[in-house]
Amino acid sequence: MIRALANVFTKVVRRYLPDAFLFAAILTFVVFLLGIFTQGKTPLEMTKYWGEGFWGLLAFAMQMVLVLVTGHTLAKTRVVGSILKAIAGIAKNPAQAILVVSFVALIACWINWGFGLIVGALLARETVKKIKGVHYGLLVASAYSGFLIWHAGLSGSIPLKIAQSSKDFMSQITGGAVVPVSETIFSPQTLLICAVLLLTLPFINRMMMPKEEDVIEIDPELLKEDEISVPVMERSQMTPAQKLENSMVVSMLIGAMGVAYIIYYFARGGTLELDTVNFIFLIAGIILHKTPQNFLRALTEAVKNTGGIVVQFPLYAGIMGMMVSSGLAASISQWFVNVSTPTTFPFFTFLSAGLVNFFVPSGGGQWAVQGPIVMPAAQALGVPLGEAAMAIAWGDAWTNMVQPFWALPLLGIAGLGIRDIMGFCTVALLWSGVIIGLALLLL
Image 1 (cartoon, one colour):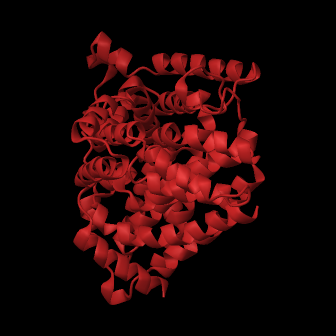
Image 2 (tube, rainbow, N blue to C red):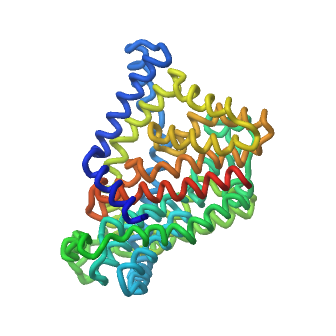
Image 3 (cartoon, rainbow, N blue to C red):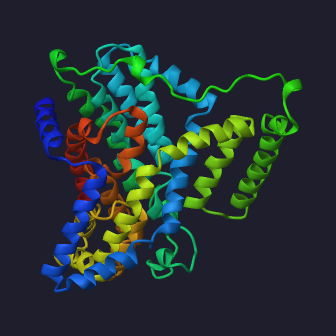
């Protein structure tokens, strides 16, 4: 049944799902028209909201790019590469390959979503080099399914943002209250959801394996690294600048300063925040790459995968501008709030966040859109702020399975298109929706 369901969704997606950029453009037009026909705004007003919101998330966009770049750079170190090759060797057949890639991707995305996306793609590439008969689209979809738990992990933007004391708008949505990660990322409810997904989702992916005659493999030769080969030079032939670039001294000094600051930061009571996570991954990448040249080479490769994000993020910021300024986002969220009780509030918030995520596929953007409506309502109903915030976070992560925005870097590394994985991801969406929804209703 799971396999048949996956086949149906795969056929539909391959026929009707547009390219990710066109998807963002179509959503722009949809929100534009909804603002006119449901909120009574004029075309000029909607255009104004779009233009004013277009550059509204540049700072956060840079944070997101750094999450991806630092995660990718760390994933490309020799240490991590050796670990991935060893893990790829664990699987002995296609079924085991699906299970291993799914499990590792979930763990890696919980640690850091940028790291997890890249690790999942790289592990999928390594796996098909070792095992024949693997349906490559399903393998890459399994890697992407790990992204389901990113917002409940150590790089989750909403829980990290509300865990810091700040005067900016994003932090003040909670009314100035600081919500520690013990009430969000490390709450019993969140940890239980993560555990259930970790133990079940790999097997759901395994059940989607097509029949042997329907397997679409990929030639491992097509996955050879296209990295620039750097000629090895004798140290005596190097210029002073080249000697510095290939010296471990600079990297180790920067690394030592970074480690010292991290220890100092947490010793003084610092909390895990988005900037902190980026800083840790950046310093780890510098240390493990050993020399500035190795680090910069990996960094250059990582930046290439941010193209789709850099171009599309302003489009989604414009969508967010129209959603917020026209009152459309408030109307959607408020409707869910109005039909809620203290028991059902987290569940309906989750559903509304999943819907809004189609138009604002950014954890921070989603927080800016829904936080001002959801958090005061949570306080009025007596729902803990941490639980309400995580309901938004889970909704954001949930529909990422069928929102192609964040799949772009993974697909770029895997060498596939969005249509190759989205049918399988739809099944992951349905299964995870049941798990998360039940937990928010019953716990």
